[in-house]
Length: 340
Image (cartoon, rainbow, N blue to C red; front, side, top):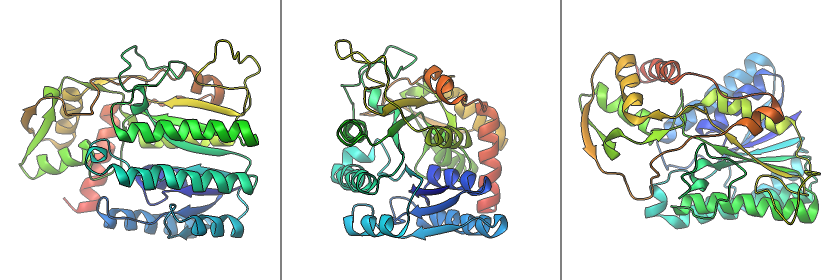
């Protein structure tokens, strides 16, 4: 099949594109390659995708454009008839949304409208897109379930991702466009983002610099290994969303609809304390961290924990990579990539 993968130079997009190419699918990557974090990491990912394309004989094409540019998106769809669209490009980062919310409007709202409009007009069979565990916001009933309401986001980033879910429902209802939203839980692993904790902690520990440990290391995260995320994304994309025949408008289920629309969590279903995560990094590096203990940051939630029974029932898969193994894999990649 021919896939459009937006954000193909990004952490998750690169991993999804890699797995698609390995199984023999054609991939068109769409990415502006901005400088939110070191573009050299993004360029290196793209080089790896081109190498893999040559090795496997599967085609990878990069469209280096901005998804917020409607003309560029429309031109891409006019040139390529897609069997599936996997929309992973976004302005990421919870904390940056407190500093520059307008970047999230452009990348997470305007770009989403361009993609979903293009899917509508080109009759794309299925749109799968990235949401986030951050939409659960002030909810504390865990593990987080897709069937729980999500009406109290704690940062603008989460609000834009929740908006994507609502916009997708409107299009699924109005135009019968099948859409699947995937709520990712704290993704980590090789080729990760330099602005995320694992990358920052590894770098600082190796350089003998302190690491900032918020909430004194007491909050928990459902750390999910990136290839597990990619496998879930591809499986969900392969299975076109269908209406829920049992959906009841008198008691509406927030995760399904009488339209071809659905939501899934993708998490490890195994929350780990931040302090234990740091210990796994220390073990992999063979070096102790100098910890600067700080209070919980504005916009952060104390804990995340995914209920993944719906994903498992629908696509026969749940993430399972242990944190110690995943962290060790990242550290090995980091040492090789940076020659440390």
